[in-house]
Image (cartoon, rainbow, N blue to C red):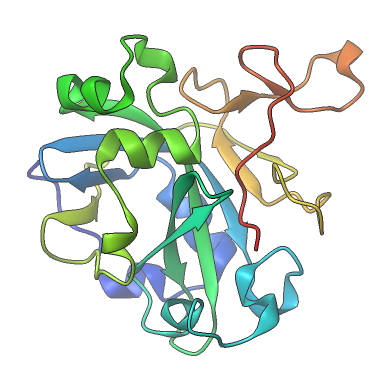
Length: 214
């Protein structure tokens, strides 16, 4: 992947601005790459749904550090989720990466996921980390250099849609989930008029989301 790597100033901005700007960018880890189509913003100590709401702890130390680093955490005793640290150092904003469009290393990603169906390969935060081989060993890694980076190939994403965040118990009505409108790669699609404003999974089940949670 020859596209330029996003530099630290890209991340050293308000979290929502970074979240919106990340749509369409490309995450590269080794031979695998995927385009970001869905994210959620978490606004630090003022956001009751954010890990940083409890302040500085050994777990959240990465969030208080320099922007442009990975914050990878374990959830439900099963899954790992990837966030990118935003805001100037000391201000613990972060962006959860919720879904990617597969671009490169697809055979390897299919093997890791044990599945063939391309549209579901990275349509969720736990799915994409497994497919991309992103684990807690990468927690705190600087994504502005090395073999785990975020890149910009100049692609335009079109219209962006804002919805409530998924799978959280607090501040659940804050519209801080952003996705490329109409993307087939997103984790969940906007509700139809007869769904009463609920956000339905692609497969129609009632599974729980994987937003940040302690």
